[in-house]
Image (cartoon, rainbow, N blue to C red; front, top):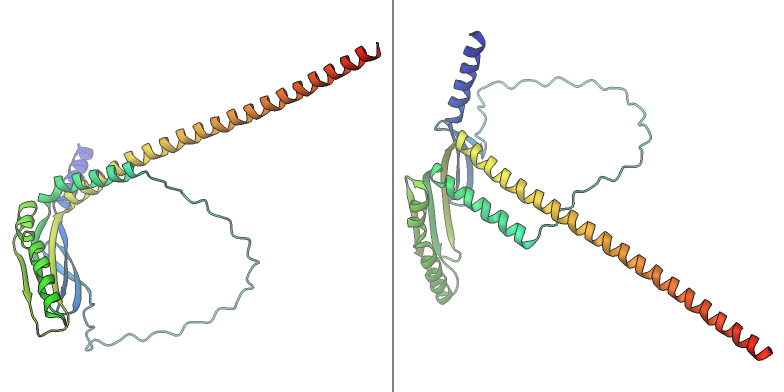
Length: 252
């Protein structure tokens, strides 16, 4: 009974961990980049690092004791490491991309996008080129917001385009905050890993078959060369025998 209780507690803890939402908040706004991790809705700033509290006294570093230098042993010649050669065909690469996109398609609703921001301001020295560029970008981004809402669970989506003939260079502001449960994340990773493993196994088998076929071809080529040599030797012997018989006939 005790063992069953322990197993039940472990299973319950793992299930609770799998339900924890994790994510990230990425932003490039006003020319500055920021990155934060999100765990259970709590943001942990990773970049830029928050400034240190100057009120706290700094710990004095103890001077390191100098250790006596040891004579360095003679370095042995470095061994050449065997590199894993991967030669994927176009069909295998295309199959891998399709499988990855298919896995993302199954889990796209598992991603919760709390914020998606994309502001583009077209600008430049040439007003004509600026207007043309704005037209292209505006046409491309006009369908982005509805597509995001259709594919993902989006709370706040802000996609805007603008044009400013007074500025010399374009401006882009980008922001993305998303989260996914740990269980769904591992499910996505394992699904992609198994798909990639299947393609890798097929790739190894294909290369093995090609190597065997090329080995057989080389062997057949060697056998053909040997046969040609034997035929040439037999022809020379027949020629010598004919010449010897002709000499005997002329002498007789």
